Length: 345
Image (cartoon, rainbow, N blue to C red; front, side):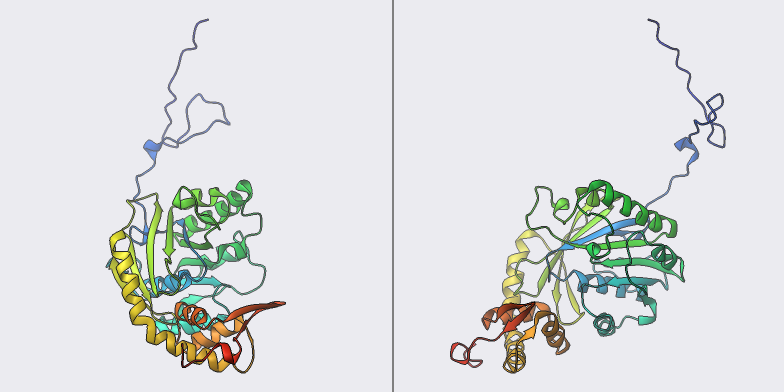
């Protein structure tokens, strides 16, 4: 059987192929101007795209991203020395992970962030495909949206590929339409995957649609040292690992680029330096818990408000043998007096 002759369709300047059926329209890439990727944090967080920020609970994801928001809004250098190309930008930080909005406000204040440049979308039942997000990104000079944590705002099933892709595609359209950096924070799953960029909870399609995946690694919760690594970058080479130190409520000290060989010595040194801070946290924790047991979600904000970091609080809890007791909610319980003495700790 003779093969059909092949005729190359040459589009006109409107991208329509002459002689093609009316419903067969296409555009040649020859007619599309080339465009470089745009960035909030050059080489790390793109705009017009989704970025995932992942890590274990208490790893410091929220503190890290608020530090980045502070730098972007104030026009300060990012941890690697690069600058945000946009000026006088605003951000939306939609957060249920840290606690009450007042806690977020305090963290922003501690960092010196101009609070009138960081906003919260009002109302309940917000989802990733909600039109309120689209409207919010159109307001003022909003260039950044942070959803913390992502799973709190998912309407469908995160583990279903079709559902996950459908919701995130809508959110991605919002990002493209407004040239905004959309940053979604999610927890790691219980088991590490063979491919690091699949470590987060939910369908692997979530990782597929993101253009950048950042991971905050906490090798020891008793250490204030954290490591930022990039597990995926669709637009540039992977950024080098960076180390930072959690220094209290909303405060970070950036150490700089690190190799794998640098990590263990940094952690050991920080532990030695953190011992006096842990002792102070133990004293404050003892004063609270000797009066009564506290729900975990209440004692954390109290101790953080006293100037202790989450890492220091967790270290003090372990050293004091504080137990968690389930009474509808999880309560922290101080061991009986004969089992614990603050002077012995």
